[in-house]
Length: 223
Image (cartoon, rainbow, N blue to C red; front, side):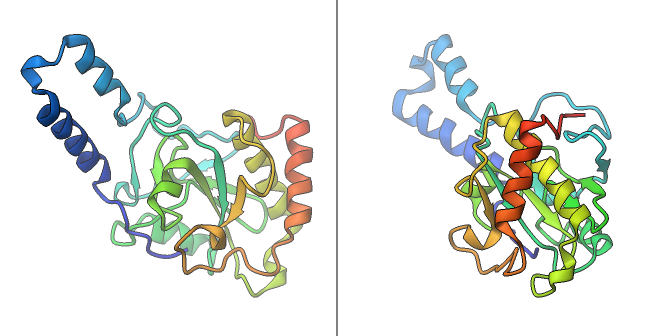
């Protein structure tokens, strides 16, 4: 966890640049109505209608992150989702919720998993959370924070790992993500990061077995 602030306001700049480029190359007066419609269809949208408090993982508690810490989107229509990124909070569950609700923090994950297995959702999966410190990875992934510290083996309880595995299995099922280590990665594996989580005590072999088992059982259904 930590400040990622690499893309605040990114959706506006992307839309402005793409449309301006199209206008300069072709001239808006020469673009057919169908061409304009197609161009706008390809741009990221700011999301389908959503219900207040709705969650993507059954049983999760909705705790909204600050709107400054994510970007509204319409994934997977505008950006495909093909990855899950595992994080560790380097602090308490309550502390993670607090900083992700702070607009000055400039970062948030989609989910936070507590030691007892309780799951909070802070950003909808359709939206781009600023969690990975890499814009391209943010756009294509769902980020899951876990309460604890990378250098404390006792942080990673059975209840936490089981709940997280069900959550990851559900995400993989919804978006057709392969359950393997190329698509379920640690924050440390994101290009350009200076983070080390989930650290040496995160048991990847055990975790991936739990995810596969949960996936086979159809766990992690949407709410």
